[in-house]
Length: 553
Image (cartoon, rainbow, N blue to C red; front, side, top):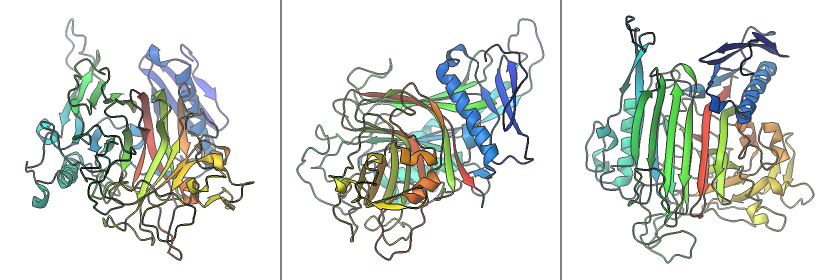
């Protein structure tokens, strides 16, 4: 395709117009059978840098073409649930948060402030300068970035006041972080219909837990110190610390100053020297974002490295609710999802390129959705004793196997529902798809659990949790999910369109007998990895084109 002077390629469902220009290839899809575009297919501008034009990139291009054609053929109309559909808005809104094992702050790091920060800016364009001799930039527009969040804002920590803070939160690190997120959200907020929105969220989490410090509740109930049984790594006092968070604010780069680039990076090892990048035997994370003004999607490049002291780390890229509680969080939140996706009527689209997998214990989530409802079907209200966080996660690391087996029914959901509505109980060894499930665990406050069962970790959320982890398998194929191990893994970048709403509607989640079915509203939709108790491992991947599509009823 490179160097092709052709002006048109005919496709079955539409016309693909290929414009060969130095700035990139512009693909414009025009349906031949409909005056309405049935889904928000954006104009796709593809970079022409030589490094991008390889077989992997062409496969991603092919995926985009196939998805576009499928939308034209479907006839179903969609709207985006996001403030920044497809990650195409030049004026970025991005934040970062960090949690300890039980999704709190615990203690702040000196000089770092509360572990919440943001990079939000607007772009202003000036007219090109009058041509002058020897002026290489005179023919290009001049752009200026105006950042809405200052370094002083990002460094705010417990005891520092700001407009609107609840006085009761001023000297409590957990409450302060929640208030700071709301404050940063107010500075980043964009007015929109039907609701304003604030930012994408980068989430970090440290899996260490000091059982003698008694910082994490058990299924929402505070408990005293107890001896460790080895379940949670901890090198001693301070093992639950927050990371160093360094920030390269987004700036304009490139010969024409039209390339936007910024970065968050750091380490949980507080003595790490990051001046030269990733340091041997030290934990590390980095998220770099880059985009050409007016062209294509932001590309978010992630790196996560575990160390001997910090062998259990997580890094996710999230679209959270713009109001209410997001997944795993019992404080008011801010985010990108101006419409909360609800089962069964939504899809999730994104491009994922995994460069390094993070080792055999890396639970790389192609998609991770989080919600919260009580066992009686009512919506969560912040009561950590009765609220239950619900997660569904698709793990695509080929090293991850099915723990759910015919002889380990405690790790399987009680039943599986096929796309046609047929249900099969886990006792039905001839028909239950055991290999489709990594594990299922039950909420610790469930009063009527079907035996045998395994309770979820009672400490890693501020309230009880229920987790259903699935694996690539043919039973998920109708929903657009991978059907075999290796799909979408290293060397196989893909643009995915997952019918998350319909699949999540079919999954088993516990409720009390006779309870009215809960509304499955997913306040967090994310992807990324959890490297589980495996030191000296590195995961690396890029994400672009992310969108959540709501079908119009």
